[in-house]
Length: 85
Image (tube, rainbow, N blue to C red; front, side):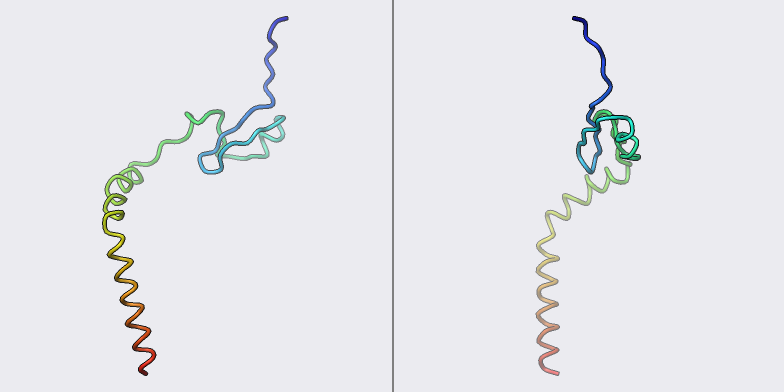
């Protein structure tokens, strides 16, 4: 018996929403834009996003504790000032 190609069911991929299996062309059309036949078709991130990810993220990971500590100190001082008034 020879193989007979069937278009459906098939899996569609979305970079944010994951995967979804569609049973027919109407379900595929109902998904809307942003769904691809394979993950290799996902759009490439912009150069700005890549630069932010490479430059800012490591810096933020290294220094985020300082921002958290500063926010804690400012919040504590503001609470004491409110109590004294």
